[in-house]
Length: 324
Image (tube, rainbow, N blue to C red; front, side, top):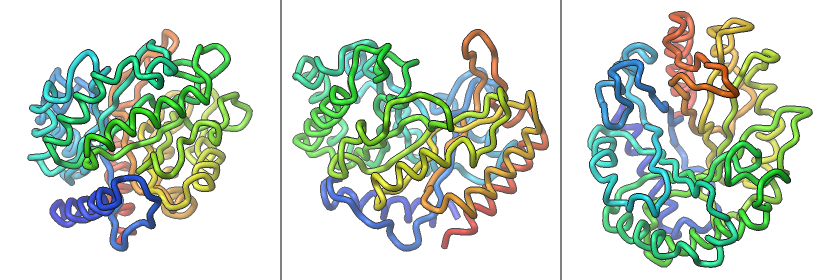
């Protein structure tokens, strides 16, 4: 199963690499549903990919031993560390038969400055070294840009505009293209925007089909109020599929608290929705670590509920089974 899924993944990434990652494309026949997690320190005291035992423990506890196809982790800014600094964890994921979904950020640097070339040296080095490594990876840069909680956000409270974000994205992507780093797949990942929330319009942030390989959405059920997967994602999902109908889509971060409702039931309803109402979603990455938001700790790990772990295990099996 692992080998078949990995070969299907390689076929998808090779199709993108063949056109330089710049042209819109239909999903290849036989593409499997990709899944994985950002796994916290709760298993071994260290996060993957530095602790691969934590991945195995997650698989055992939450997936019946089934192997993840995606491991989500972050590299910070490209001017703090170049690509080669991360070779050991990248190779650990690859040699284990999975794919890295890597978060890169620009921290508090002005996106307009980056678009105007102020950090070109760091990005060129990163891109050149990524090309030399040569293996497939997914790069999710400055995610959740439609909100205002990250320094690269594009709300009126931030100093970046939607136009700044698009210019920054296209400029950095062009650097990677010039370096020949077609093994790097670009993941454009806003936050889901449930009804009555104010975020930047997605159409104003989309860099264009030539600059995106995967679309993506993040979303959490904080329990205030209790919000189903379908309600959390449906509005943004339809907006993204209209913007990029030929692109594969990930749920890049997803989790539910157990406070205020039934976590296992929420997980079961998520998989039902994926199977029946969100057919353009090609992968899901659970955020399996504790996190503090606005001074409150959230129980995102599946293992906080045996029933939720069992529901995830059953759902992953059925979701994978619904794709050839």
